[in-house]
Length: 595
Image (cartoon, rainbow, N blue to C red; front, side):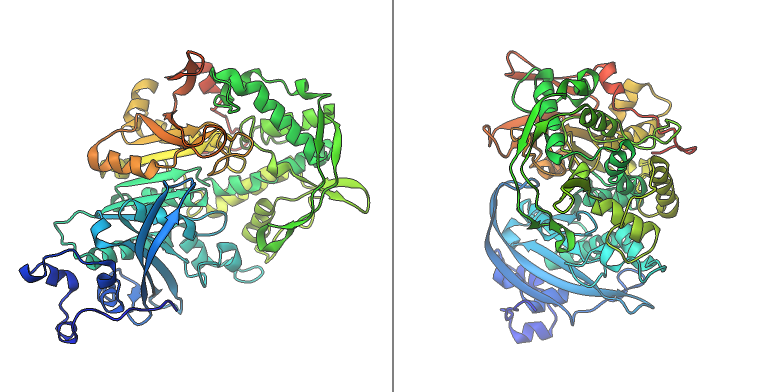
């Protein structure tokens, strides 16, 4: 339990139940309170929303902790700028009527002099509903911010730790909490707590924002789609929407290796990726080691051009770096040249999953993205390379579809492209109402004045950026079907803007393209848009590594694409139909539309 601090309010006043901020309103107490004065157990308990604040939720002030934290410094983070700050660290719990559950919440609240009437909800990654590393982003911008454990048993417990309940039995409570319910409850309780903690009245506007990437991005869309009036704005990065398709998609490269009967040294695939980056670097008009125009790369790059190119990778030792401490196996030194089989495999993978009738089931990552899902293992006994089954994809099938308490598939024997398509369809049907998160009519959110800044790394190696493009275009065609492309795009950009981030990997920078920028201050841009009507025509980003570390670069709003001129010294945002068309896919493997 975190340490508590003795209240500085006199016992007599505490007995009268007069709030700190009520006292502050009197002339004799008209001064700014310090973090120590508000971050007390007594004041925090007084700020807990009353029992029955939301129907079915039971709060208590008996399981509460509070302690001030000083001189926290963060730097080189992708989601917020470098800063030093202090905050009040609060934990509390609540339960649901009729259930013997317990949901843990953690709030970080800036000192009163730094609070700017803002609330920020944060999201998770992978199967984690929240991660602590995202919390500083809210405090830095003067916002109270929070996270939830979803009722899973602690902040280090993920959804896949509690789902299924037992073999063959779905854990429906955990499913719906992970899908959308826990974040809604956390933000509702968090905003009510924040208002009381800082003494806000009904006349004081508390701006509510969301920020998350990957699973956190999906959670963000789950909130604005279901609870549109709860939010003023959301920063949504690389969202893991279309869950049934997205998770199975991780298995496609391994099935392609099996189908084509070619399991290469991973170094060969790395060489193909690096050759792709080198070949497509200049297509945006600037040679900087960053592929800013993956669409032009797709139109012009020939995988056969890599055949015969030599590669070398040094031997590596086994490292415990994977989920549940599963080791990354050792590899021997790798030397060779890119083969025709390797080039054909890479071409097949980047073309995306198609069924046996040639119909497209899903899209894949852009050219130049790392091929981590195609990573292979070396068997020192047989001296051969073998398939390495993706843990994200395999575990989704075992736990999400087969309802087995297994962390991965044991084999891909007899698994075909059609099997993957069918698994995608099964996940779509089974979890459409909770995990797909693709409700494309956002009219209530737009009508409430909400704003969305969405971004996606163009070299994302976990969630295809075409996924974000597809949802953006689905919202446009759903809400503005009576308008032309140009007018509907303009109408959508009035409140929902998508930015593709050149060279960026999955929710982060990219070691293969270190000079790529990242929208580190996107939450600040959203705040300026919501509170000061400063429209992000382009989105400011920062180069966080490489030779140009610290430099700023603007990102173009979709569907415009970057094109550099004057020897790479100035950039235009342009549109051309041929490039646009490379992002639009016909997922004709299904009878129903995929939003």
